[in-house]
Amino acid sequence: MIIAPKKYKEGTIIETDICIIGGGPAAISLALSFLNQHSKIIILAGGSWKEKSRHRELNKGIIDPSSSHEPLEENRKRVFGGGTAVWGGRCVPFDPIDFEKRSWVPHSGWPITYDQVEQYFERSLQFCEAGENNFDARVVFPGKNPEIIPGMDNEDIVSYKLERWSAPTRFAHRYKHILKSNHNIDIYLDAHVININVENQADKVDSVTVVIDSSEIKVKAGKFVLAAGGIENPRLLLSSKSAFHPNGIGNQHDNVGRYYMCHLTGTFGAVDPFNRKEILFPFELDQQAIYCRRRWWLTPKFQKQAKIANGIMYLNGPINVKDHKEATESAVILAKSFSNILKGRSFKAVFKNLKQAIKDLNEHLVFTLKNSHQVIPFFLNIGIKRITNRRLPIRLPSIKSKWLFVCFQSEHVPNPESRICLSEEKDRLGLPLPLVKVGFTELDIQTVISSYKTFFERFQNLNKGNISYKEEDLRQNVMEEINNFSSRAHHLGTTRMSDSPINGVVDSNCKVHGMSNLYVAGSSVFPTGGHANPTLTLIALTLRLADHLKKSNLPPIKPSSYNVDANPKKVFHMKALRLLSNITLIFSARY
Image (cartoon, rainbow, N blue to C red; front, side):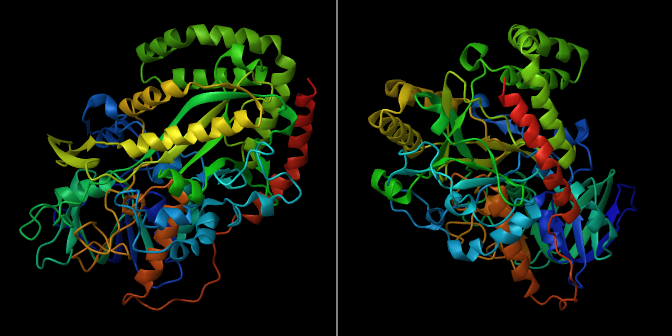
């Protein structure tokens, strides 16, 4: 049942078996895991179906120094569905090396193994509607060249590993009918938790204090799961001080909020391949009509030899007409530009956005109109994808582009000085604003430098084409990226998993050290971040937590045949329209 905000009487207490704090993919997948149980579940979602200014204000924080991180309200959405309300849909599992203790990566190593998490990837992919648990292009696409550029792969870098793309699945809307009709799951919208109450004994949470429509109530539960994201999880733990926990819950060794990680991303070079026909980098549809894409991955052998962290590289496109010479590129840039312009919250903001973009818009508009015969079938194809709800994830560069740009995404090394603290300033609910002090190390920089150096040396040695790349400028370029950093909403590590409270916040079952009934779900428990986008792995860990909770003195399982597989009718429609989609692509390619 989904419960809209309403006034409550002072002193109202609601009781349940499990209380989940948060409304994103971790919270929703955890609740759905209990559909076959008698347990009573409450989700306290700190937002509603749409984000309004009052929600956005609650996501604000302090950045120190100001340019070192994007504003906290920029990449976070305080809505039911959390990050899946806006995510792109990229699904990539963590690699086995991410779980290992690496002598050259400080604070690395998980208290659980890759195999303990990998067994949940299949179910995680079902929730994300991203196909089968197979990320090897040699198996998924037999008969095709497994390499992006033939001959490039070697012991240091390989390109047969895939990323899968969700529709993207908007969790709140996709599973709305299930959650709404289930009598054992209650979802309270616009329910803002302001304190975790430990009142009678040090190791037990008694209740949480919740503000709903200016009413303050309490929710009591046998078990509590904090699933509010990598910023809000540590914020709530740190601010929930009591006589038992004067420094915040789980913070007896000053670890809550530390080891804040994201991913380093950027574009610092480009290639002009001689043989464009041999390149295999566009999206490919597997047998389930799921979009997949290949990228170069730095092998574990190379990571160990070069003593660097994990990372990937992939090809992407330019933004200038002189570089791409492709009408559909200009059309996409125009569409995105107009979209950004209209996002202005006032006429003044819209005018300002238009003024800033006018030069580029004029250039791309002229080029698009001159080549409308290419643009029309292209957008027809996009329309078909929208109808099937399985759209092309992102617009990749045309093979005719003058340059194909080499982008990277690399692991942010765990660093205790990179952290989320509490500021003196408070929001309208009385919670201290989070204070972000993101930090990077020399290993973060060297990982990017080594990756690019290895890639371009290999490309040149094989005489595959021309390059646009200056090794002497690379360090400065990486530092500029760091000094003007954007997390891309990947907030990791702030309540990290560990065997001991001395170097972490939760144990191998995601239970807060020293607490008997408080758990944490989400990417904040990651001890390391790898190169992969976090959604798939955080859901897998959440499903593992669900299995643990089911064994912990909860009512027995009730028979049920329900599963969360993709809607068969939707899949049929996608495949039925696939032929029409391909026809428009063929027509477009003729010009």
